[in-house]
Image (cartoon, rainbow, N blue to C red; front, side, top):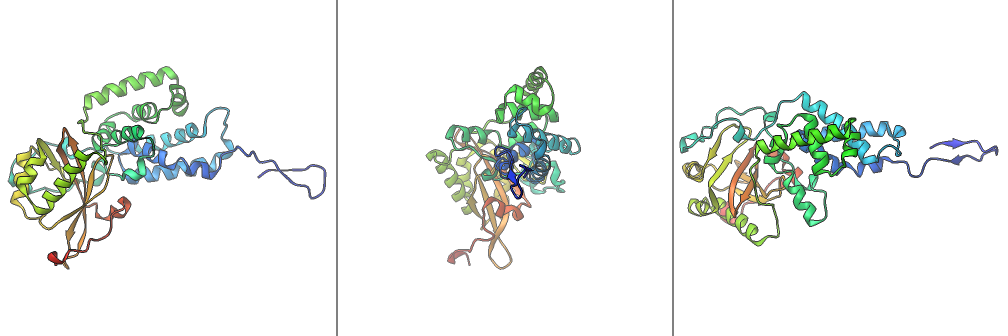
Length: 343
């Protein structure tokens, strides 16, 4: 608040600019910033830290914001970009398990080996935190750009290429706005965008169907998978998985390639017998919270599972072991009471 002396005693006048941005205006950008920082970093926790740091820096510098030079969103995304680029430069590249080594092929591959550090893998994130659109077509576009395969492909880009691709093609900033954010020129932005597109094409993230929760065929497929998994019905699962289906289990590099390998391992183990699944959207894809009985028979959080669907069949099952502590973040309960026949 600024006070001005009008020459009259006790006549202080508030001359604060009513159009100046406020902390509430910064908070209104949090969802959009979270989606941007998550795509940049591939980690939900790192994205939270980056967004918080961005808002703190922006709040401290609000008095220096010049609306004649850039919009508030452009200005704040410049801060977020600087934060993320600094983090990316000091971090190792995050991957999917399928990029970390050859697949196992038989039931004996149930030996997962030693877990890798968590920062080797792309982390899952709830749709509710990164899908900010309300228009159905925009929601579908946002789901495609937070798929785990796309996030992993982004991590192969140089930090500024990554930023250019996201700012131009995901967040729809103009070339001029992107140049302002990156403090560079429009030709440099266009050149970086061209290189980023070429690198993404080389990475070839696997195509998947756009997740449509109201689509009856997808609903039926996911319901049938849930039913077959909970019943440990290998014959039913055989009909639901594609012949080229994959299964992976971060934080292990272990993964399986092909329906026969996936089902052979599942059939050879009773580890999942009695487990229950609750549907939850994850990374723009269908997913489940997997619950497993504890020593008292109560079903407790065990793992988050992402299901990728292609051409009407299940193409990839990604089970994030060690993710039980994140269930509340995904709106999942901390337990499921077993039914009378499960006691």
